[in-house]
Length: 361
Figure 1 (tube, rainbow, N blue to C red):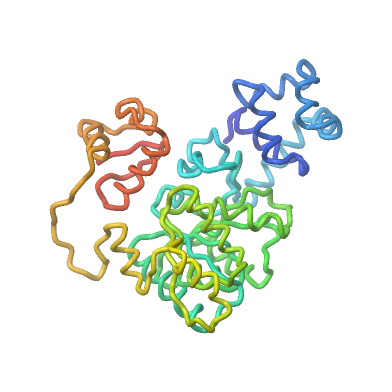
Figure 2 (figure 1 turned 45 degrees about the horizontal axis):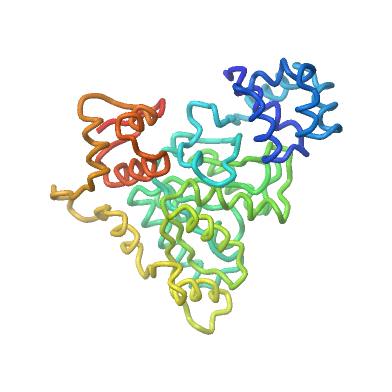
């Protein structure tokens, strides 16, 4: 199921104290990840310098049977490993800061190629926050957006449930492993999402979430999404980290206005006051922003304006399907710019993404 390069990256996830930075530094020593298996002794000094003596000797003492047993257990739990060299690793995440080397996935991995929007906010929303989150999630899901959130209590929970209520799709990005759902009260919701959507984590199943892992996982929530909606958030809400990641990546941020006396919405009101977010008073504001015709409206064929950059891509797809790398070779666009244009063309229904990272008209 997994090739040697993928297995090498899966193997690294066995070592709890091997940080993402150390993983990347270690992998940078080799042309291909699989070379680590044959280089533990021949490149001892370089490897030990990166990972430290303790982890190095643990690596040396770990035999192949442990890795195979680990993979068997993942397969039994219906968990798929998406490494950065895997075919279905999400292209959207390749260009974010500190992109994960591995993602553990449970559910429909095809959703990673769909256009999506993140909905985040406080863990203790008011009635207004709960109702607004549900309303936006439901209508955005009905209009084809995959709803991405973090499975936390509060706004996250209502975002996921709103999408499911609309028979739409949702992705939950966890702050820990699948065997330690937090909060525990969302365990049943997690099971439903695994069946009807997708659970995603960069942490192996046995790891528990900590106060440090939640802010870190927010970069993945933002990375998978074309934009971020903050429905209700306090001044120091963790949801604002997701907003920061989105802004760094040049993605739009939306926020709902709230009563000035609502202490749980100080953060969202401040986003609007400081012009850090676009005001959304209806799901249609977001739908229209991305140029999508609302589902309930009669769809009439209209003249669609495209940029010169988008025309380059469409012309390249005129004769045959192309992969991301092929498109980059033809258009000479930078990876981040090409990825952004491809996403917008998908949202507008002008192209579609196929298995194997191919695109077609």
